[in-house]
Length: 262
Image (cartoon, rainbow, N blue to C red; front, side, top):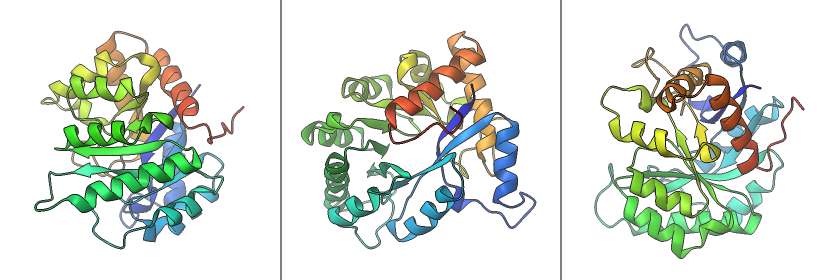
C-alpha cells in the first residue's frame, strides 16, 4: 500500500528555487511512498492549469471550485457542472466559508457555497470543504442543502470535535494536515484521535502548512508521511494501519479516482 496526499496545490508551488521542477517534487513524493494526489483548484480561472497537471500523470486527480477567500469572477453553477464533467475531476471545491479574513456582508460567500453544493449534487461528486471561523454557518448550509447526498471532506480540519461530529453525521470525512504536528494544536490532535479510522484522510495542503520538522518551509506532498506517522502515534496504531486506512478511504470517498496501481 501507499499514501495519498488528499489535498495539495501543485500549481501554487514555488519551483523557482532549490525545490526543482514538478517532476522532482513528484519523484520525492514517490520515494516517500506517496503515490496518489488530489490537485485542488482554488480559482476557476486557473482550472485549465490544474487540469493540465492532472492530465499529465495517471496518479494525479483534480477538482474544480472557487475558494471562499477569492472575490474574483463568480463561476455559475452551469460552469462548475461543465468543468466537473471531465473524467479527471473527482470533486467540487475547494469551497466553503471563511469569516476569518473577511468582514461586512458575507452573503456572497454563502451564496457561492450553495452553488458549489448544488453543482456537486448535479454531477454526483463529493465536496471539498474549507471552513474557518464559520463552523455554525458551514454546518447549517450543509444540512439545509442536503450535502449528505454527495458527502465530501472537511479539509485541513482545525475545528473542535463537536463540529467534526456534525460533519461525520452528514457522511463527511475529516482530513488532517501538518497542523496536527504543531505543539499548540491540541484541538486538532484531539479530533485526529477520535475520528473513526474509516473516515480519516491525510493531506499536505502544499505549499502551505508544512509539518514538523519542516515547519516554516514550503510544504510538498512527500511530507504527508510525517503527518501520517504523527497521527498513527497519537492513535497508538502502526503507520501501516494508518496508511492503509487513509488510502482506502480516499478511493472510497472519491469514486471517480481510479487507483492506477491496481
